[in-house]
Length: 98
Image 1 (tube, rainbow, N blue to C red):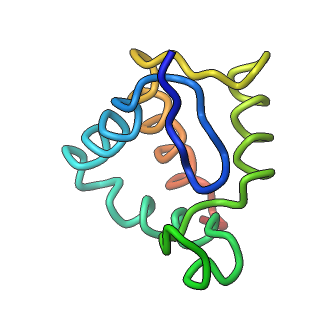
Image 2: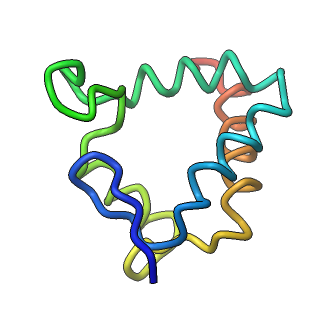
């Protein structure tokens, strides 16, 4: 099994997961704005001071969210990642506080 490293957290699964999620959002312009908003909101504090210098979520928060969404070890199924990301962003878009 391949591991994707997102910040200090290793996410089990194929390296295709990030590409699938990005492509799923890229073809849906209605989600571009909310995806940027949510990226900013979930980014760890002072993310610009730590490599890889990307606005990624805190490792403990990311692990918690993966486990609560997928159960067990938090391993997402590659074939469902795109639909999961789109569904979550659609939900965020309809939520008043988003």
